[in-house]
Image (cartoon, rainbow, N blue to C red; front, top):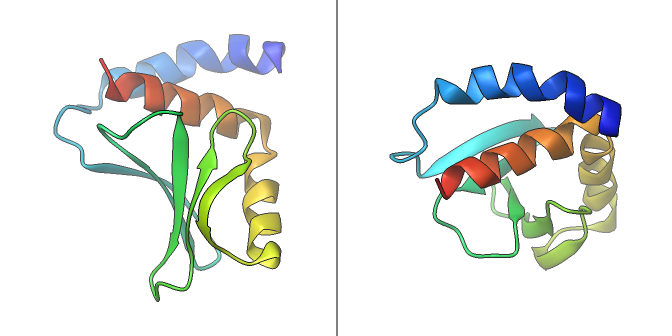
Length: 104
């Protein structure tokens, strides 16, 4: 994970320096099947991301730190999909970067 942080840090810094987070209500990270992965600006701690479906059947929060379920309604099958998405080493780095930018 350390090597990914060192490689991705300059790339992500360049990318995020061009985004104005002060007026952003939400930042959609990805769409996994029918689920949107979102980080809201000015949200409360602990650092977390939201997983929502358009039909409202999924509405959950997960910790950025370890992808553990905080609250919400989501099936075990859908949790596995979120965990698979999260398992990409750059995902946590990107999410943490977005969360840290929102408070600056």
